[in-house]
Every structure is written in structure tokens, then in C-alpha cells.
Length: 154
Image (cartoon, rainbow, N blue to C red; front, side):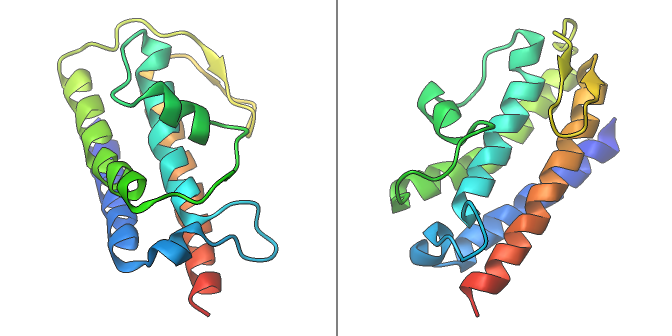
């Protein structure tokens, strides 16, 4: 299962570079025709990965509940994110996926609560299926972030 983690780590590097190279104003901007912004999409992938890997496996998440409530499925940006929160999200990009990789290597994902994802209707039955869906999910949001970047930098 090394390759999915390699892809996720590279995807997370893309998101980190996006944060580093995009102004706070543009990270928060919601262009016409969009329901969210760049930083919400990045926060959302961090939260979703933790929920689909750790929470469904009965393990603690490495993120605060306040972050989960702000970026989980069904949410949208309610306020502008400040520089401190942007830095927190940026740091969590590597911290969370590295934690998941370590948990995986240690064999900590022994139990798993089946979960049917609303976007595709697939039921995740174990950590490997969850990781495959996480790859798909982060790819979707990478594409959205790329589209948002074009709009906010136009």
C-alpha cells in the first residue's frame, strides 16, 4: 500500500505550495459560480482523510473537533480564515497523512466501521478501500483548487 501514500503525500505538497504561493485574500475568495474557496477545500481534505481513516477505525484524529465541524462534509465557508488558521491547515497537511501512514505501518487499522459515501454510493469496508476513496476525494478537490486558482488570479 506504499503507492497510495506516495500519491497522497505528493498531493499534499501541491496543497502546501498553493498555500505558500497564494495571498490570504485569494485563499479566502469565493469566485462567482463557486460555493467555496481554496482554503476551505484544503481544510476539507484534511478533515475528510482523518474521518475516513482514523475515526472509522476507532482511532483518535490528530485534528481538533472545531476544525472538523468547520470543514466536514456539508459545510461551506462562513467567515474568512486568518493567517494563523491557514498555517495550522498547512502544517496539518503533512502531519495528518504521516500519522495515517504510521498507523497503517503499525497495523492499527484492525477495526473499521463500514461507511457508504454519499458522492459515489460506494461502501467502504476497510482501511484499504477507505484510502482508495481518499485518493479519489483529494483528486477531486485538487481539481477544484486548480479551477479556483485560475479564477482568483485572473
